[in-house]
Amino acid sequence: MITTDILIIGAGPTGLFTVFEAGLLKLRCHLIDALPQAGGQCSEIYPKKPIYDIPAYPEILAGDLTDKLMEQIKQFEPGFTLGERADTVEKQEDGTFIVTTNKGTKHHAPIVAIAGGLGSFEPRKPPIPNIADFEDKGVEYIIRDPEFYRNKKVVISGGGDSALDWSIFLTDVASEVTLIHRRNEFRGALDSVDKVQELKDEGKIRMITPAEVKGIVGTDKVTGVSVVKKGEEPFTIATDHFIPLFGLSPKLGPIANWGLEIEKNAIKVNNALDYQTNIPGIYAIGDVNTYPGKLKLILCGFHEATLMCQSAYQRIFPDKKYVMKYTTVGGVDGFDGTRKEAPKAVVKKIE
Image 1 (tube, helix red, strand yellow):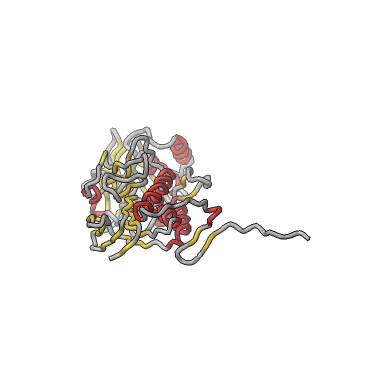
Image 2 (cartoon, rainbow, N blue to C red; image 1 turned 45 degrees about the vertical axis):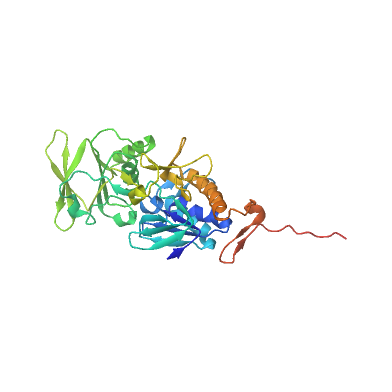
């Protein structure tokens, strides 16, 4: 059984930053995530997309943010259970918890911090009869590595930001990009719409609207898609990849059955104090929680993680008083023996 001070469900940005804040309090952390790598959505869904509202970073790629967070918490030696989903929680007589994954791995901790973002995600799939037969054979719902499409023909379907952004990005990677949308109007950022129009005028993007992909062509892999444009006969477009980007449906998964108070697929917490749930000792931070005035932003998750760790410390050590010290004054001592501190001023006596 894996034991730790704080068990974190979710290894996205909020979960990772929790390790740092807990480390300052000399609390050890272990993280569980259903994905095979840390980073959450930033690593799995949009690693190459820029984020503009992280303090001190005018612009940072989502994947690079994950790398920086992993570097920041390295000295606190967090443990990871990746590729496994937190399934059940059992409260013990002493108030601690045992969380078991879908693969039977057990974790024991006095504090559980749910930082699972919006939960697990399932792609919204278009109603194409044979689409399941071509999944991972030319049909992808998420773009993980743009280089995978180098010099390939790509058809993207959708009308939101993801469809627009990836259409723009892949013009410098794929040999041919076709964007298909069932309406003439798009629901993305205005500058993205303008950029797609510009690339269309330059002949770098083929745009077909209003139209829908109604079928996949191929035997062992995708060789084309059948398209129906309003008022015209169906026609086929040759392609190597079909990428329908219709968004993702978030689901809390088994956590929804843990007895937590749920509101609109999010976990209600006490935001007046410490983001604790209705079960003492279980907290919810980041996009997975809800409270009056909640904003689903990474930087808000960082704030919530900081306050949550202070509360967790008091639960674990009720008789100890923690005196906060700024890292610029007290430095940062890692569990691996490393220390980060500001250079000391040199005191020199003048004769």
